[in-house]
Length: 201
Image (cartoon, rainbow, N blue to C red; front, side):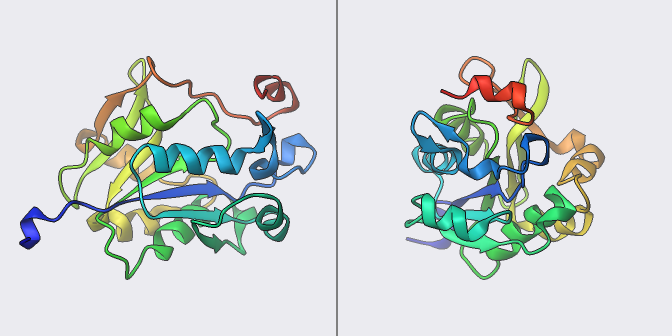
């Protein structure tokens, strides 16, 4: 196979470092959903959606998450600065892919259990080149997961500060984003507050 025919490697990056501040400090990765921790559901969504390898960024209670969740087939990165917000976790996830043969990173958040393999597969299929920028949309509104071609990682990491994640970058490059409608196969709610816990089964 020549280089041009190589099947692109779309790595899954799961941001699972949050401490669940508004949930009384319960790490979101370990919230139970259908009998298993949220982090396992999200890993399965990435894998079943066609992503591999899967890199998981842990932060709050990282040792406890490793002990209680099955992350055996994942590369785990621990973000020591997780309290700074999502930006630092996104940087940790992208830097964990440095030196791999990944052509793009598909980024999913651990606290969105309504987003499964179908939405992941749709966004993954928007990959065209290492400069691809794509995101799920819900009735036209951009959401997760988001796909970043490898050529963009350095710029995204530079702007990923505080709780912004890639928001600043995405706003500045909105014309380049391929939006992939997913509202028929996924729900983009977050598990942020005690009231949201009712959405877990």
